[in-house]
Image (cartoon, rainbow, N blue to C red; front, side, top):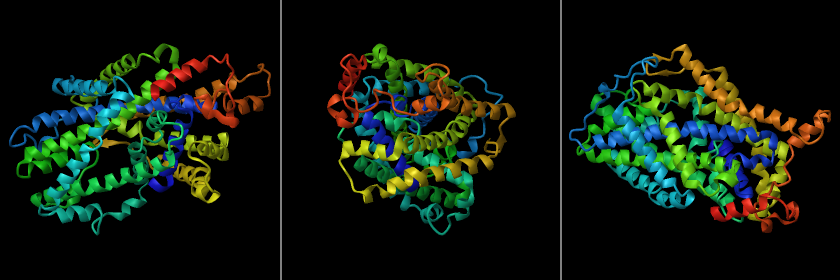
Length: 498
């Protein structure tokens, strides 16, 4: 999935955002009929931000609890949640942790990229230190080999490769970890200098990112192997996924180690820093979209925008920290991630390679990184025009066809809960056809203009599409008129981003 979807889409999105220095909505001035994809990305980022900050809140709670000895939890104590229709009151200590999580996010992003860029020096490097420490400790434990064999080895269950859900999860993992198709990459790359080598960045970031994921697996499964040895059970019975791995299986394994509070503190501080890193991209998407949509009103009010977004998302996240909050978190994870990202990624690659024109897009990239040979572009053309859209389409159709109702453990979701999940999916995607119809309707000309001409105009770049600054537009895009009201806003915004 990294080779056929991750790298091609990462390179495409980072080039797209850098070329025009716009957020996920305004970049679609290149193909106005697809501007709804940008709104979908912003809405996905909203749900993702809620999801990630609940993870941070849980991690903060576990971190505070880790200062006790022995650690005050075990896997057998993790069955006290109610059913989804028995939500109950908000758990106050988790609400305080969630509030603290949003305060941390708001403080780090209050000045936008200026403040978050400094925080990232710590949050992006500290997890490597912790992973290395946990790996060294893990591989020295009895039973570690069994865990690693289960992870990548003779005990791996390769029959899972025939399961469509595994492929959908692989695509979702790549999309989330690389910020593909939910706007984070476009928002952050829009801050790059115009002549930044986005191709080199794409290769380095993608390989480093996925290499880190593989490396982390060894640190996790070596300790799970030891846990299986202690319980005298197969690794498959102690391993879990998602919340179960992070907040039940792995903490339980850490509690069995000598000096268990130390390992627990390191692990949950690492989770907090990873969650904050992910949040920076998500909140950046929302704030950038709002500022791009209302530049005259919000361009100088970044701190206020960030604070308002954090307050609203804190309130929206409260249902996730009730007694049955885990069901709401799992619902968001199931219905607001996989399919929506696949649809957004598919429309994105089709829109740029077919409607905008793949060769035209390549010329745009060469304006930034210099001319390249036809051989250089061979793989990228193959992916953008054929491989990536075909793979994404197959996974999307396959996963929808084999869909089964979600469960949490052995508890099935009620029908109204599943219906609500589909409503969340529809709410994120409905803006794509709505905006497409609106753009066709608003195309220039009278109401009796030929429909094909209106569609063609809605699929063509707007007059102000192209690089932000006049000095970067060159002969291909010319100069804007002196009376263009966007000049001041664009120049002011570009200076702010620099």
